[in-house]
Length: 196
Image (cartoon, rainbow, N blue to C red; front, side, top):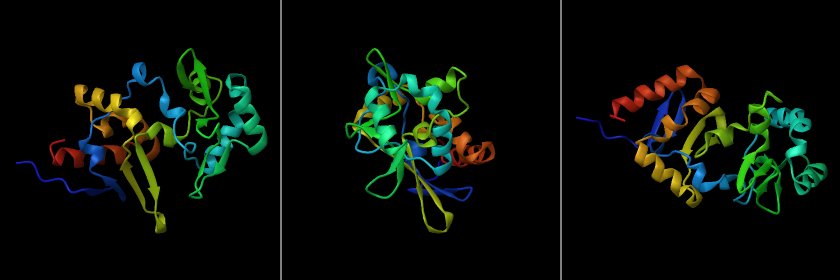
């Protein structure tokens, strides 16, 4: 008999929402066209180290950025503090990430594009790579991971269900990038205890 999964689990000192194990997700880029880069009311959460890496990558991505994005970066930099006091990438027109570039109707991340072309060593902010997982920091260094639901990702949820791909499996590589292989292996062991 499979054990009942609690709403919050602790894995390697990190709190995780059980939705990360039970919900399904797989980006369906052919349908969404990268809409998550241009919808919302704030940029992607970033760390001070990521801001430094982004600034080091600016020459490589600059030609792919729109004139509006270049202007925003010239005026306020690559990041700002949002209304909650969190550091986030700068945005254009109140919603588009400044690092959004376009290939026809498709939205691309200029940072990731440059990385894939070997022009920079910085891939993209970990918060982008981990989406739909959102990382929350608490007092005392405690970290919590939550599954974020967003209407623009409805096709990704549907595709994840069709493929029977839980969020934590879909995000294997970014989770390993952020927390390490050992932590991810422990997460998989916890999931297996609940038959997931």
